[in-house]
Length: 113
Image 1: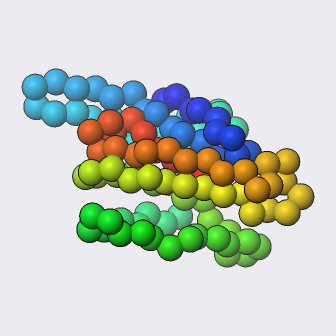
Image 2 (image 1 turned 120 degrees about the vertical axis):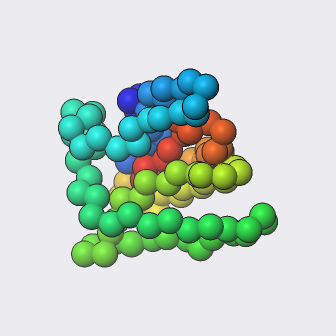
Image 3 (image 1 turned 30 degrees about the horizontal axis):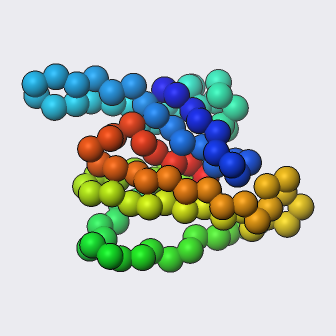
């Protein structure tokens, strides 16, 4: 598992090791021990999946305090432009925008924020 920093403190691109053969591919999308070793100590307690039709824009997700959540975004089909904006006043990266294209045909692209 490769963890790549982005321009925003606390937002990472996670690239798992992909094992591919003539049957398809397999990869470990989350491993608590590896995340902990990388200093990413998130307590994942919920896993959601949504499907969007072409051209759909999903809403802004912003929480703070007791409702704050980390996000693990993965694309199963197609391509998504995933954008993060640091709205945390006082953060070293306040106002910074970071984005990545997440592509189903490149299963090693996940964004955690």
